[in-house]
Length: 311
Image (cartoon, rainbow, N blue to C red):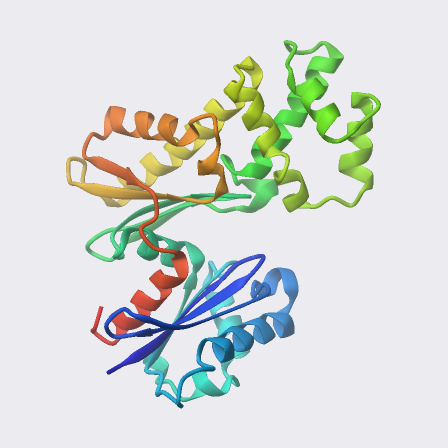
């Protein structure tokens, strides 16, 4: 019997599972963020070590044969080098053969967990967004994932910002009226919409706090607000463009292909997922868009098994 550890390290929390070669989950642990770029190296190491210890706490000194760490903020070779230094002193990892230690970005494990194997495309749209694909030849392509300033089109942050911009344009008289003016004012308990400036600029709100306002735009779209629906149409268009770019880049048109959608934005009430599927299938009837079959951390475990030849 072989055993592996799979780790999903995100911006808000880190999850680890202990998996057998029968794909059975034997242990699980959770802790805070392990994105070293946002929380620092020591905090990232603490989270990784903590989730490993929690995942193996009820086992009797099992030999761990492999580990896969899928971490947010690990998109370049330099990032992998940093993570290698972070984990080199963690006791459990020290006993694993170097060739059985996989460090990747979180989009890869989301793909593997979402589809159940490592061929296909993941379209992740939460606070931010990224599209990542891998074909049968092992070729990969990433589109987006450039952060809230440079990218993240289709993510919750950009949807919320577009909603607030539309509100102020309508208030100025530069754009058509929208129910979002009243919606934002009521939700944030503002005396007038001009106080939106104070909320955004002076309360120390970050990306997550602003992204949490996206449901306001979603609710307005459900009720038929033209401006809100245009914002979601634009979000869908950006995610479709990114997905098509990946399809054209590494896949053969006409071949069956699965695209898994992950992230909170796909749970919107205004049928954003259905809009996306319709746009994709209009030009790619062979593409099947699905919701995740398993969580990302399960995908990390599967990748750990794969490096042992036991996936």
